[in-house]
Length: 285
Image (cartoon, rainbow, N blue to C red; front, side):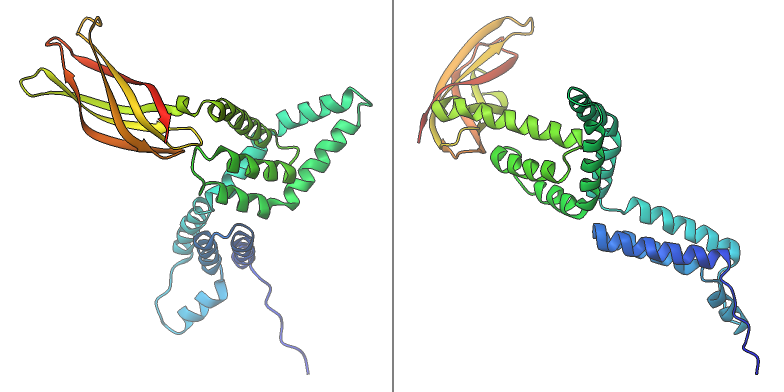
């Protein structure tokens, strides 16, 4: 008895297999469920024999042209829906390959010449092996507060250890290390951590009283209180026409911001057109 002929996969079905494989990679490596679903449905459009069976049963089915259009759209959705962390990591690696190569190779050339290139290759290999861990750290990094410099530096230290040849990661770690170093001044003089982040002034009363809504930021590691605030007012010509100073007997927690509304700064010159405020001093709470 002869065996039935085995039907070979046509090119759309081969494409379907590739799309499913991409879907599995996106799901397992990057955790992109939406992107994975889009790629899987894209592959579904390439399964020719299923559509042929549906047509043979007299049921409506997409035409070949329609399948190509739908598959193209789904493929585009899949690409766009890949988690941003994965894209950022990929772009950072690609954009900084040349910088990483030149810096590490230069280091190697100062000794024997070739070890530098070897270090680059080993660094890139290590980064590829640690892609999942790096993407996880980059994702966790987004949950930290912008001014939590110490915690951010710890993350960048871990990331650079996983990708030692990535110059972009090294640059960001150095940038964060400098910010941590700048906190040394605030450790010695926490009172200098008070900053006016935003202010909005207006005239009230009979147009001669300055009232402000002011947002104070405390960059220090200690809670601060009793903020002496000076608001300098200028006329339309840019000339300083008035200056008002008041003490705000409130507390702003360490590494946080707080907004105070309708703060009465006192009488104001009739020709004042704009106001700029600063914190002159504060005390540790």
